Length: 430
Image (cartoon, rainbow, N blue to C red; front, side, top):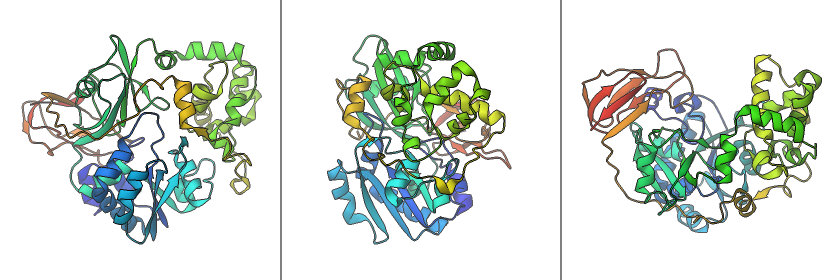
């Protein structure tokens, strides 16, 4: 089975794209399906549970058998009553449904594992440390289909005529995806890839869809979120050093801090003015999950503690520093439940209330004339092309493979056509 999993090129579809055949070599008592999907306006995972439940459950069974799990839990927000009602009769006796509160970040795997098991993953640890393995819905759907991954599900939301969830060929351009959702409803617009909270600004409409593209949020160029994501590090550092008044709201609402982890974003802000060496507790930034609550919700001065923590994490890792504490002493904050951030408040804070919060799965077959299959769209090393310019390929054919002895994933053609280039990506023209 391991070689088959590798042949299909299945990677984590909701995060860094970790190869599934490597992840399933572990042993765990429990498999958790992450269907929380807490990014505002995104609906892809909920729609897949509703319309691809058979494939998801088949993939879940494969994962359980591979890791030796005796039970599984599907974590999905309690507000999706229809989805839960459709799924409940289909699940076997060793699988249960865990309704989740409509808060952010319910989909953070540390928060999800705590909600499901009551156990806290130790700082710097993994779900496996508490006997659990977490997989995204689409990852399990791809696993359940048992075939090469050639397409991606994603929600197109925000300033578009028809917010929806689409199944698109890998390598299609983001501009074509927006067009399939009816096009932008504003004259000048930008795209956040991945979501409002943990996404990034797209390089432009020609940027290709990859195996980890979970959503496209279209916003007017003058939207406050676009300005926040465009801010350069030099400005973030300069303003943060002079403006932070150490109110500590960023820390008090940090989900990892509330789980008992040694992260205090206000200390990272303080260290901007005094230097890392002056505050040994800065090593706690290793626990930052980059959920962006501190920057986009908590801070009353619109500062950017998240990017400060991300910067500091790189410094701490470069110095080889480790958190010196005792994991057994980690306990959730007494106000953990009370300080969860309701999605309705987050949507208001982000300036997204005006957009329709829908994303139905649309049965639309997109036929791009050209796809650009990036050689690195997963964790690990870039894939190596196994085709040459001028060759003809069929959808599903292997076009790039994992380097021998390295972490990575195979890549397959998403359309039939002629290979135009293999220099920086495998480009196929229909």
